[in-house]
Image (cartoon, rainbow, N blue to C red; front, top):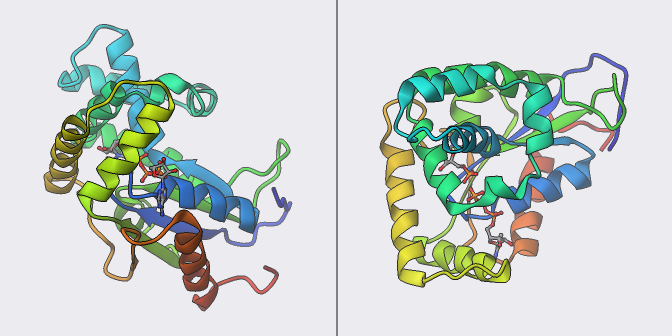
Length: 235
Ligand SMILES: Nc1ncnc2c1ncn2[C@@H]1O[C@H](COP(=O)(O)OP(=O)(O)OP(=O)(O)O)[C@@H](O)[C@H]1O
Ligand SMILES: Nc1ccn([C@@H]2O[C@H](COP(=O)(O)O)[C@@H](O)[C@H]2O)c(=O)n1
């Protein structure tokens, strides 16, 4: 990862979109290509959901969710990011339930903004020249000033097929109709909540990947990012 000891502003790429649209795959590849830090903001909500489940609380328990979110800090969250337990479907559902609570969202906001503005570099004490954050409200709420915003989407049936093969590749037993139904319920909860609902920022580049493979989506996203006036000339 490219690192600098300067205070030049971080170039922020904000990527939002519904479940299994491919935003995480895209965000990781963009960050690796640009030498930027990457934050999967969904993992923060998953960490809150997982901590509730592990403590035996229902994901609908708002007070427990607020306490869990307020208890998260970089030291607890960053090691959790690659924990396979976070990727379970039951955790995704719990994440989408805790994420409707405004105080949970507020508790996670500073961490995300700090990451975007001071993205960690490859070595302690260094910063990257930019950050790629993916989630549901990065372009609308977390980093509305980001110079490059993308909204990645795909037909719900396409997304359900992608998630189904992902689940089956991990050895899980999964049924298409159930995956599709879960996805529709999660999309509706994420899009209809009162605070920070899933929606494209007004100035987001809309990238429908229904008919694209991951390489085509990456090329389209890079073309857009490079076209932004603030795109750094050192890249
Ligand atoms: N353009 C694409 N075409 C086909 N498959 C893709 C594409 N992009 C990603 N995938 C695959 O679809 C699945 C879901 O992708 P990914 O995890 O990136 O989605 P996501 O939007 O980050 O989902 P979530 O919000 O649930 O974490 C993965 O198995 C990934 O390899
Ligand atoms: N910025 C975000 C990111 C995620 N959420 C909620 O978390 C759930 C899990 O997210 P994944 O990206 O890992 O699928 C998601 O369904 C949202 O409810 C959020 O609210 N805001």
